[in-house]
Length: 492
Image (cartoon, rainbow, N blue to C red; front, top):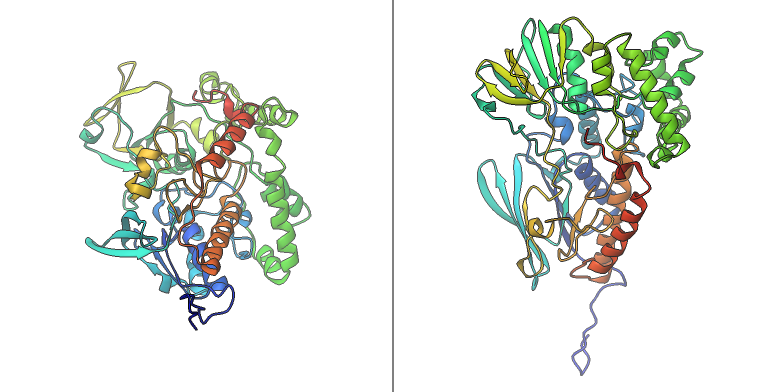
């Protein structure tokens, strides 16, 4: 019906959801969660998850280096609503984590929403239409798409980088990066060099040491190697079982028995309690990140003593140059199953000098020594710029890359001023280092979907955060950080 003044009553009920089209970039942990939650809770929508790889799983699809595993307990590294009683090990290895996400997608029939081998190149906000025009590379062919809302679920561990070392690509042996591993390479009886002391290097070194003729590790930075995260919970759970000796090995991987799995399958409440204890054991360490707190001092003393014990008598130079002087937590701590033990094996040489040049036959350090190797492994991490890996243009054509320079302004790690209807999962100043990422993903995705639901029901064309609350939030965060371990110098 239309009144004399031209007012029209639409034939729909109050809060009837308008059609909304959503593009999610990535089909890893975040993208799959978006697809699942929208399928469960939304009507009158269309979702496309563009995934640049040939399979789902994100970082667990891409990272295939030997020893690649999650550094938090497997039973804590699941969606809260989707436990997995079948985990094989206390710390899950990459292939099994990838399988977890594949089974999740199969179980909930999420594949129709996913387009593989499709890399988003750009997203441009069109003000008068209230949409983003999106350019996508699909197996080398560019296509154009559009959406009301775009969700960046790419994470920040997908843009790996080579180290900036002179002559790196002049090396005539096999050059590998931890995030782009060639599984066909056999390092048995070879001379191998590993550059780095981050999480990837810490997992790679023990595996390579077992097979290599000789391994040289270039260790420029100090790092904390922690006891197993949640290890006490495991020991308590296994203290009366036939596998108690396995659980008591303080740095060894624990393999769940068929008896364990049967118990988890048949007693969901027991599994839930076990998962709660694991998550609680991590969350209870929050005070470790408060500079000078009792927990921080206790953690530093514990880790220092444990690293000394595991390295063993002697090796004073290694202890001096590997064990940090700053408090744990300033940089991410890593459990490091077998890492310290590997460093003192006869076929391993830790080198603390800088690499000045790579030559065809090996590496030259700043003492002028040539280290000849057959295989060179760069475990040198990722570009952590936090800007999306695709071009984003917002209001009046403003570039997100420009807006993020010198410092990105992101509200609650989720959304950005001047970029309406743009959301990111685990953005800048998002998930902390104190626990698993997946519960954080769930909270963030739930927030994003609530915004989208409101847009649907209230016919909101553009939803954009203002700059003022972002500045206020950053002022609060910056002030809080002054009393945290992150305010200390942890570069060396």
